[in-house]
Image (tube, rainbow, N blue to C red; front, top):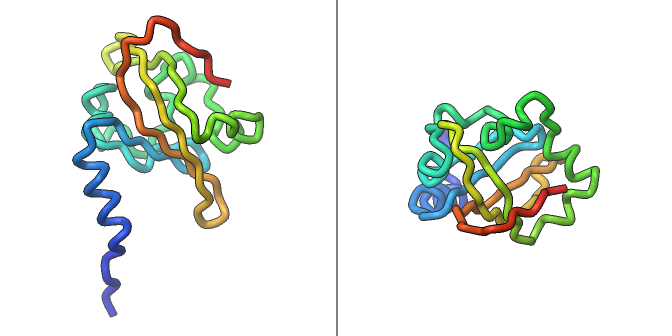
Length: 130
């Protein structure tokens, strides 16, 4: 028997696809599972290039020493969930950009997943994430 589409998933997909803001979701290993068109524009990676990569693709300084999002949460970064954080990210071409991330976290299949709504900002002062 074929499965009917999940209406909630369809709504989310439509929301993410049409959002002017970057929508990024990552699994418990920090691997990108959602990357919308606005993220493509912000960071220069296509969805195909970003899916399955770690979130370190937006901050190459972290590529060689990536912690999983679950490890970050265990170290206290979970206090950032529900807040908006401004930080420096890197476009695929190497240019730096200030972005604000509105962070969320949820449990799915017994594992922690994270999401962010991302906007480019002209913030003069960048916060350092924990």
